Amino acid sequence: MDLGFRGDVVDFYHRFRRGYPPEVIDSLTDAFRLTTDDIVVDLGCGTGQLTLPIAQRVRSVVAIDTEPDMLVRARLAAREQEVTNVSWMLGADTDMPTLGAVIGHRNLSAVTIGQALHWMNPEKLFRAMVPFFRSGGGVSVVTNGTPLWLQDTAWSQALRGYLERWLGSELTRTCGTDDPSQLPYRDGLTTAGYDVAATTVDYTDELSAEQIVGGVYSALPVDRLPTPEQRQHFADRLRDVLQPHRPFTEEVRVRILVGRVR
Ligand SMILES: C[S@@+](CC[C@H](N)C(=O)[O-])C[C@H]1O[C@@H](n2cnc3c(N)ncnc32)[C@H](O)[C@@H]1O
Image: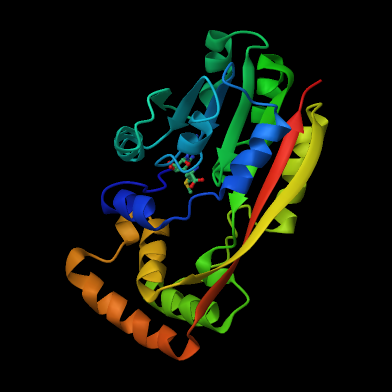
């Protein structure tokens, strides 16, 4: 499936998508008892939102994504942050069996999947990875808050109305962030033989109108992105729609689902 994380979307993604607070990285480090001896795979790495902070806790990270443009931006971000222990690879969840075999039986400490599992085949992936994890290692599914236009606030509802009119379609996909989506992830891990635990990191933030516009652009496939000529008009109209609902407060819930092997 073409998800359109290409072209201008990549830079919007990198500038405006939330990273993960240190508590999330601490939680993953604790869950898998990660040390500087460990190898981690970050699947669906985007521009490195989970990859880069995790790389600072472990020996090395293999970061995988299906979109070359995302990998190019991620590699640049690593250079900017002087992170040198990441290997950036073009690939998909379906490459995990091969990659696991290369890394070696029970040599892998963790696979992190940040805001990307909803495009993969969870059951197949979870099962395929079991033999590669060392004892106490495993997989973590991390989601990074409800989409901006599906939140329970007046500004979010105004945003949703505006976007649905612009795009001419309803926006309902939660991208794995809600309870009904999490349930099959949990069940898939349990069925594949992992011990499962779940935790959340909750915080409140206030967004600017510019951050909301950038966040929207970061989530659109490149072929639905307003053209450079349309963007000023799109942003001005959206600001007008949002303005009565200031401040743009967001309650962010990061969900961390962990499956460990014995
Ligand atoms: C929403 S971004 C998440 C990026 C980052 N992990 C984060 O937490 O912000 C999802 C990423 O997953 C990638 N992706 C989608 N399907 C994939 C698949 N089957 N295998 C690997 N990566 C995939 C997309 O190209 C995109 O870069």
